[in-house]
Length: 114
Length: 110
Image (cartoon, rainbow over all chains, first blue to last red):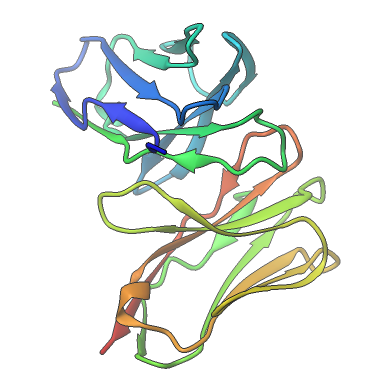
């Protein structure tokens, strides 16, 4: 079974631009979560989607948004990029997103903001 | 103060050593505890998952949870160079969002 895939793997943008990252979950998984990983703050939860609905949201500004499609694929968007948005963005999928479900992580998209 | 504290290391040990990795937490609502391993340029992969106090063993790995002390540990027996990675503890209150420690970088010397 294929794992979680994320595209693109690397991205370079400039301040003020916007960016869209994509995540394809493991086949059959309906929950997708997004995390931001930086050297200073570590891994921080952004939001979680299940059946096209956002179920949970972390403490990030409104510039960070996401959505999920009917095939469970998910996208996250960051508008008006800031230097501090440079990070590894990780997507994780699980079958139903319950607390006992294992979350499987993708390899991440490394975003650099210049 | 962060909800989850983890010594960033780096921790360097010789091959075959027993490794002890630890996290402390302040939120008593955490019920589920996990350890992830992350190799360079890869996403985290789940090693151990537990939701009760006590020990859980899986091969060379043992996870220990002490809810009364708000302390969790991961022990790696007979460590191998292939165990060299960053180890992240993670916790959940049951609302699906994981709260991670900052990660401990482990280097096992051959």
